[in-house]
Image 1 (spheres, helix red, strand yellow):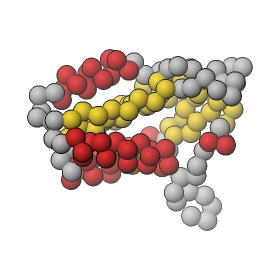
Image 2 (cartoon, one colour; image 1 turned 45 degrees about the horizontal axis):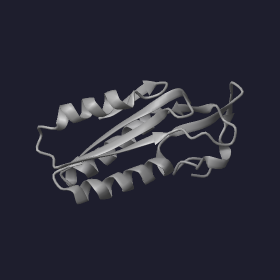
Image 3 (cartoon, rainbow, N blue to C red; image 1 turned 45 degrees about the vertical axis):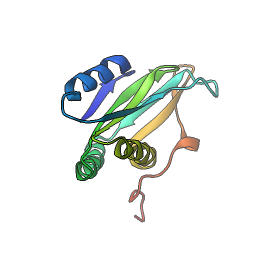
Image 4 (cartoon, rainbow, N blue to C red; image 1 turned 60 degrees about the vertical axis):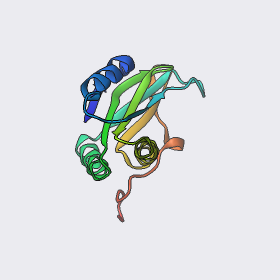
Length: 145
């Protein structure tokens, strides 16, 4: 399940909904990761643009991998502005055994940072400034790809 929200994520609401929805499906582990915008480099927050078709395809390939492992993958992400100490990203893995969920959440979050088609901007004095120093090119992108 992939959920996109405008602005900061309602963390408690999302995690409670996911737990209530899946707690009776005989998963033994529910491991989650919550990303929080840090107060650093003078930013007021972060702003996100998402290319939905590629994100959906990328997420669906991960969902297939999760199924192969007997797991379920969940993700929520923000579009637009998210301010310092608010959340922009939640990922969770449910699986019958904890080891699968622990390994998969690590792999998923790292792959997300490297390959998800989400562009990040710093918000400084109300302006969006592209966070070039913290961005990585998407695999297959560019003129010579």
